[in-house]
Image 1 (spheres, rainbow, N blue to C red):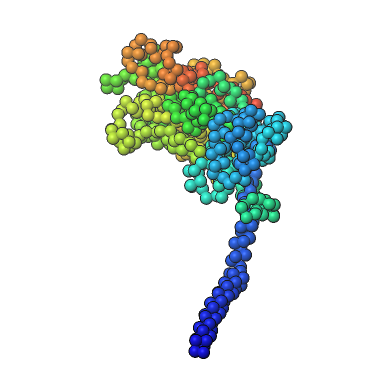
Image 2: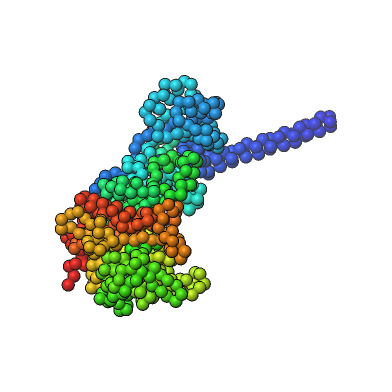
Length: 625
């Protein structure tokens, strides 16, 4: 009996324990259900929605670039592209090799696509090639049963209608690099097919051109596969930009330079600084960069000694040679160490200590004043002016005309050139300045270097009355562009009569009976061009070479031949255009560069490429009392 009672008590204890455990378990479940369904309901609902709905950025159309007359320079065109889906292809390598038999697809690209497929989910499409022709699309479509996993779709591709003609100004777009991702937080750059501006206007104004991303909400299943698009918010298109470039003039400049191995030409509107043409040869096709350049083509372009990828107008730095003599003349006139009537006798050389500095004309020019010294480009005359005024005064005047500094044009990569002085040599080379260096700098040699753009700006500032115009490409984007419409640019602080004497010398260069460029006068009745020739040495000529005339031999290696330069403006009495031409190793400014500049000036006048000029050919400074 007692044993039965003990069993009953033991059973009850166990029953209570089991019931308590069950109560605790169901209580915990109820608490957890309350926590999930009531307390944390909003959070879990949001997480579930985020897992069900993917938000994806959509690429807006890139802004269009047009020339000064509204003609397109960079546009977006519909294009077909082919993609591959790994899970549908089963054997991607075999499918890609089969595809390469239908369309152009090299081995390197196949390996790149296979590498991308290894990094993406099996159902994510990877682009194989863009810019397919309709014939290629048709061939792929016909053989689609043999190409599992291959998809055809459409998109927008950046296209440059005029190709190499405007390449150095317009630039190009290309895939985003790791460095660009690191310094730019725009989420658009994370999109696999997004293209960013790499050079030219495309790079300078990339932010404005790329626009703002749109948003697409896609419903996906548990593994991330797309089911349907729930909604879409379109992005903001990139801004359209109008350039100062005149397409007809730009094309003419490129055609005129085409026969040269390497050359550059710049055309400016003298009253506003608008760049009407900027030609650099050799050039390249910017469209080749849009989808990623092949290794072979990149090596070909990068290894070309003529540097086709470099815009020589803003990056080429050349000794200005005799085109610099106007600066030396102005420095001497402004300092009062010479007057327009100052004469110097040229016997063909000038001695300074034990050194002899030669004139380009070995027999000499005789006795000359300022105007004829410019017209005949007498080196000895400007040696003497440089000796009198000194390098620091020459450098100060040169900087007023844009030498030795970046001019701030809205293109990437502009170089400053070099305008040395005593302080520069002491700080940079740890050496004192030598008097002989002043002489060679006075004729644009020695340490002095300038870009073709700087030479064009110098010419514009000379002929517009000494006004500090700045060059620009994109209309309405820079403060000085707005100033150019009705407000005169700031004065350089030079005396008007000094400028007029220098301009008289430039007039005689082209139109005088003994001018170095008289063969390049304009063939237009009543219209005159003024200019200055320049021939700059690329290496020092030894006394022995000069004695035997080795420096004039026609069979010299190209890289040892002199550069040819010419700067000019027209019309002489109402300046509207300034032109600078540099022909690398062209040997003679009068023979190689001047005829090109004359033809470009004729074309600029014919096209009337400056319709916005205030008061039609009248400059703001000409109206001042």
